[in-house]
Image 1 (cartoon, rainbow, N blue to C red):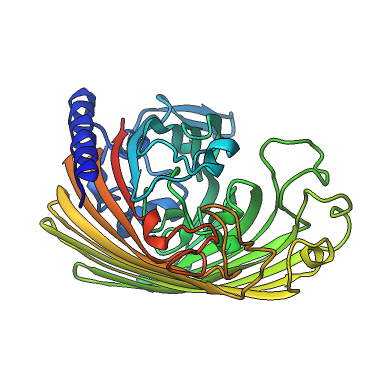
Image 2: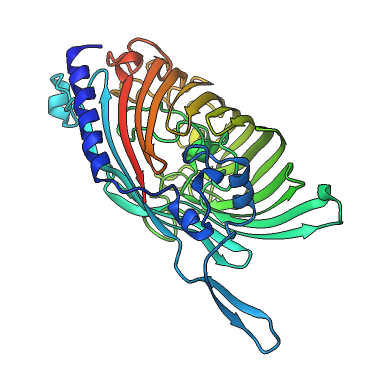
Length: 465
């Protein structure tokens, strides 16, 4: 590692130490700890990853509580109100430092043409700041509401949000007939999921939002998130079988309303999402295997006439799995998912936005993390995206984000070291190493940039209170 990188790491580490001295102990999301009165390690291994009990808490509607209630009762003794006396509110702060192996081109066109580079290293204070309402609203009804300020975009708005109602049924006296029926209203397919092998809560749990990232991602892998609204029903039987069917439609943030052709990609009509999985638990172990997917009809937007005409159809099929071993001293989690996306680009090809009518995109993610006494740990992850070459979807000659081959193929590793001096404070050192970026190893953008130039050192202070 060269001297400037070492200096950057030392500076970032010192900044993290200073920030740690200013932080007060709490937990993520501390709202739930305040509501339940239970140690947060009951629901989390290391935040934000859930334990089996944490998954039960979520699937039961976030309503378990140990607080004084404000109640309303009719003369017929029907309960009309059951409200926590203190609202379950909490906050989160992320402060980060990002360094790429080679700085990106200057954003001023004249300087970029002369080979000038942007500042080498980026401190975000904050990278993100969030307020949460997380907990019970009424009997059977609870929510996870996240309002976030994005330091890079200088934008304040709703982040991952899930409102759910759950009803417990005991079908018979037998212990293997426990059933939960629920409804979920949310803004990001998979944010309602209780396992950390799906995209919304998957590894890496935090990363730089200013470092270069590959050009292609499947629709279910965060592309739709926060620009959709969905309602669905689910069942959780015998703490083992999970099934869900939801439908999503466009809920674009910002821009003109009603939506018109000036908008970016927007869902059209109702788009089905499905989820099916099986979990088994024994001793300190838990194993989950599942499948999920979405059929998304999207109007490209940005081109006159795209609304009300043809749409692009994306069908995502995915399989995932998760294994956990949890004791007081040792925590091991292994995660994996594979997503296959079929793209029928009728609208994009009609308006000259894609070269092909039919494309595919496949993503694989694998990760494993280990923690000792929830205090110090590490993780390693592997990601690989391959797809059909399309010179209009992935054009050449665009610095950093372009693809000289027209291919979306990207591959690499993520390495992490994490230290938690308190259960609600995480100090993270992350290194992202690219083996391939946007279709090539060298000169991938047609302007001379290498995949390795995007290798990223990322330092994060993550505080929950």
